[in-house]
Image 1 (cartoon, rainbow, N blue to C red):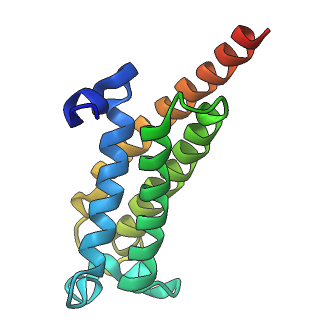
Image 2 (spheres, helix red, strand yellow; image 1 turned 180 degrees about the vertical axis):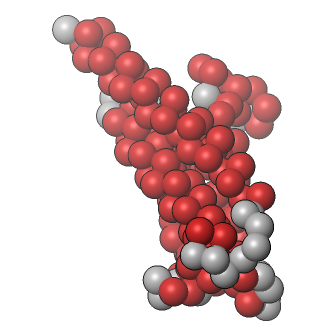
Length: 146
């Protein structure tokens, strides 16, 4: 078994591992006892669209777990770059959705200041790069296969 730090950095995919782990921890946090979404007006957009701690937490864990498995199994199956690409697009959707949802109270005039969760746009950018890199890996595996 490969040491975790070596596995995370294998083939330069550290950003994919980190954003996947961020989504995983985000989900675990929402599934912890108590109601995270009741703690701040920042979560208002999630509630408006019908999400609660459990539904958003399970969605996050679903996306993150599938991505982490795909990253771990990368290279063991010829379709793994495609799965990584799908995971990157799902991660992109997650981070963009989270960013917009946290910005919504400010845009709607419910909050007087924007949320610092706008930093999740950086994670979304990392996902764009991961999707691009996965696309290159798909092309390279097809070229190598002849």
